[in-house]
Figure 1: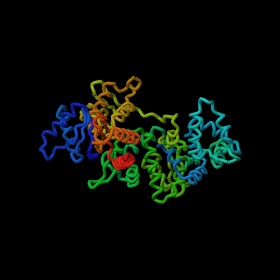
Figure 2 (figure 1 turned 180 degrees about the horizontal axis):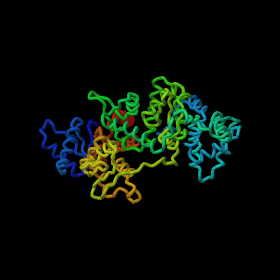
Figure 3 (figure 1 turned 90 degrees about the vertical axis):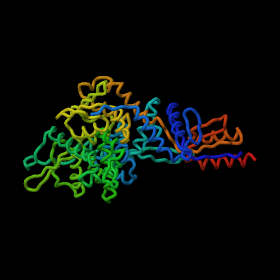
Figure 4 (figure 1 turned 45 degrees about the horizontal axis):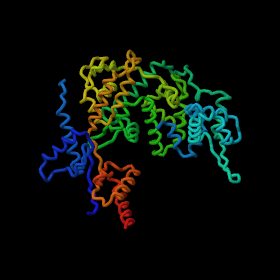
Length: 71
Length: 448
C-alpha cells in the first residue's frame, strides 16, 4: 500500500468536547460528515471547510450551558 | 520595544547625527543600564580606545552576564564603538566612546547643564501654571484622544488618526474606522507605554512625509529636560519644531499659551517630563491614582467620573449603575467573553485591575481576589477548549524505520502535532507538507 496524505485540520480538545463533536458529526447528513479520522481520546482530524461551523456550534453549546441574569 | 530600541534601529549615520545634540546624549545616558552608565562615565575622559580585555576586567567574573548586557546595549546605541584589528593571528578588539557623544556629555557634566531654552520672562504676559493645572490639562488631552479612539475609532485630528493607523491601533473598513485588537490591548496598557508607542509611530509617520526626523527626535528628547510649568517662547523654534509643538499639544505633552499681541509660548507638562524618566526602568514616573475595587463576589466599584475609564471598564465589566462619581458593575462570563472577543487577554484584564486599584486596597495582597483572577483565567481557558490547526495526515508508511526517520525529522522542524507509532500514522503542520513529501521521496529512493 502506498503512503497516503490527507489535508485537513487537526482538532485538539478535552474528552467530553470530542464526544460532543462526534455527535455533531453523526447528526450530519452523509454528504456533510466532516470527521476524516478519529485519532484518539483528545484528537480528531476533520475537513478544513467545516472548522468554522464546528467552532460556532461548540460556542453555541457552551452558551446554552450558562445563564446571565437580565439587567 | 521602547523608544530607545527605535533609536538603536536607526541607521548608524543617523544615530551619530543625533548625538550632536546635548539632550539626546543625556537622554541616552539616562536610559542605559547601571553598569552601562558606569562604563560611560569611566571612559568619559579617555581619548584612546580601550582594549576589550581591560573592559571585561572591570566586571567581577560572576557579573559576566550583566557586563555583556551593558556592553551590548552600549554598542547597539553606538555609544561604544568597536574596532577590530588583526595583529598576527590574534584579533584585538578595542572600544572607543563615540566622539560626538563624549564631547557633548563632557560639556554637560563639566560646564553644567543649562536648561535647554531660556524660559520666557513672565513680564511678557506668559503665565506660569501650577502643576495641578497642567496635570489636569495633560490628562484631559490624553483622555480625550483615547476616548475618541474608543468611541469612533478615529480622531478629529487627521495627524492622530494617521499615527494610530500606522501603529495598527485602528483600521478603516467600509463602515468607517474601527478599533483593532491591538487597539484594545493598547487601551489597557500603562500610560508611558502608550505614549512611547504613539510617539514612535509619530516619528515614523513624519519620516514618510519626508521630514527630517533627526531634529524631530532631538526636540522630543529635549522636551523631557524642560522645566515643567515654565513657559518658553516659541519665537526661538524652527518651523519644524513649531509644527511639532502644535501636534504634541494635541497629545497633551505641551500646552500652548497665546499672548494678547500675537506672541505665543509653550509649556511642557509632566507628561513631557516623564518622556525621559520613562526611559530608564528604575524610575516608575508618577503613579496614577487608582480607582477600582473588585470584591470576591465579582462586584466592581470604580470611583471615577472619567468617560475614558467607563469606556475601558465596559470592555470587561457589566456596568449596572452609574452615579456621578461611581460606577458599579460585575464581572461575569459574558462580560469577560466580550473582552476576549475584542482580542484582550485575561492577563491584560487582571493587570489593568491591579494597576488601577483604589488606594484603600492597593496595599493588600492580593489586590484582586484570587478567586476572581483565577476565574477570569478559567473563562479564557474555556474559550480555547477546542484548538484547531491546519494539518496533513499521513498513514500507511511502509516501514518502522522510515516512520521513525520521518517523525524525527518533523520533530526537529517543530511541526509534529500527533503520532501513533503502532499504526505508523502521524499528523504534521500543513505548511510542512512539501518538506515532508520531499523527505519521504528522498528516503524511499535511498532505501532502494
